[in-house]
Length: 320
Image 1 (spheres, rainbow, N blue to C red):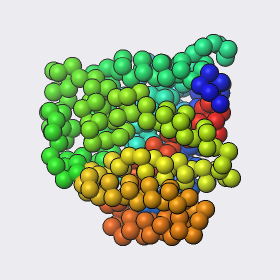
Image 2 (image 1 turned 90 degrees about the vertical axis):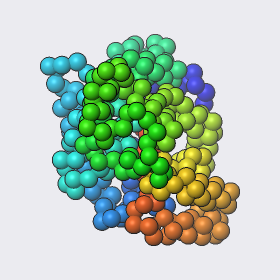
Image 3 (image 1 turned 180 degrees about the vertical axis):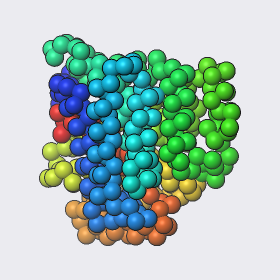
Image 4 (image 1 turned 45 degrees about the horizontal axis):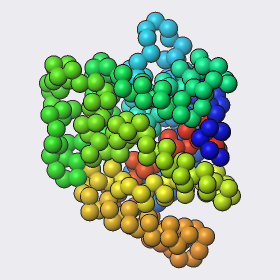
């Protein structure tokens, strides 16, 4: 399958929102090393909790798009979903990464619905051209809503990412951060570029999701027929991402050496055919036990978030 054959499939905004929920549920309904799954909780949080919160966000997103009183804004869309997340039991930051990654793609998808099905913008390249345009034309107001969203979510590892003070003028925990953003005319994209050094989600905004696009085109599509079930597919996407990039959440909560060590162990599992050999299964079990021994500090949350958005993109284009 080549890029020109990839066609955007949804026919309504409801389709798109349902695909978001489906992609999220596929991600956290699959057992993965160090992460929440059907057989694994982290700090008492279960995959049933995640499903419940995801469903509440879905309902809020549907309501957001039905409200025609104001123009659709990527920043407000993010804030609306984050507010719903933190107001839903168990009242924790469970899906911030999902929300951040989905948001520009959902806004682009809504615009896509206005294009004729046989038009060039219904193709893979057109979608990413539109996503880049939406990110590039984000506003200072979007940046303010983003800042409020991250503060509201109480995102982990923001103050001292990797054990180091933030090397940035735009520390969102500072009391006057909104004034700085306004006075310096910093948009949502500018803020993500500013944090891209220590956050792979921010890097997706800065690069128009290059990591995800390359993973899908160069690895996932050629390999997809080798996976016998959706859970096997999800597991392998997760492990591939973990092996390619040190997890940002692990880095922020610990240090780069710890994140690189886990990345190296994920690479070793891949080299031993993951769960298809006894050694691959043993390595996976050992990595899972090690990551679970640190009370959530080694939760590869960013890898899980990227897994979800890769699934989301693949469903949008009929790859899965």
